[in-house]
Image 1 (cartoon, helix red, strand yellow):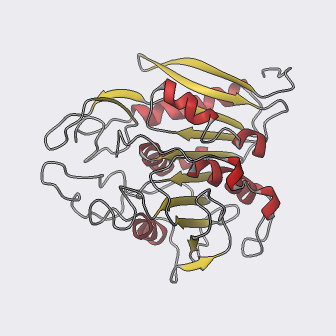
Image 2: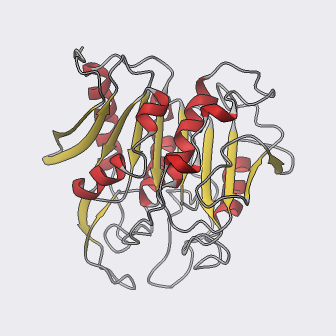
Length: 328
């Protein structure tokens, strides 16, 4: 295992050859043995990925003690029938009706890369068992969702911001016919059901109120995921659990379901709707510390919050930065 000698967090870009491509990722290594591992995906190359890891979620490693790894996405030509685009970084998240290549089917390569990356990190550093989170924003959130569907045995929590909860195998959008993909039975079948925190904003230009396209509303799609994939029952309810201190100020409403017995660990499934939040990557900087504390601090599954308010990030911890809308 690597020896960590610095008293400060070490931050560095590392390379990894996978499937004939040079993949890059930005790593924040804590000065003490990591308390866990957080993978954070954004739809960007290594330049913006490094900025995302140091700005939008720059305090997460210090707040959690976890190692934070931000892999860069590959660059694709997103032009296609009905989908004007160009060269842009993108995670292959949708085997059907995706957008990395203008609606063409997207391969398994990115999912396989993330598996190999987690295995590599865990071979190089001592990461405690049962404390790995997969997370992402926007298209990176879509990739996190797909990873959860296919490789949930490798993670212990899922955290997704500014994403609309589309089943990866049903697809994102039919650009040729300008409509949602055909309705199909749920195709996402995780090997285990891990705790979830998610958030989106009412002014998100894709998934807010009103959404860009009917059917893109994130809270409604989270409800479908909760009932059809997680097996939650009852009606959604408002909860005081989960993060409520996004930088936009007051107005956050978080939802959960009264019964989600199949979710492992803390058993949490929370979706927060943030008033006035846009398609903003800083959401992950608030979600992750709260999720890490709540997922991995021993508590009664139906009891009080695992972390006290003082343990959670405040609006002062992050600054608003709108994600460039080069993807979704």
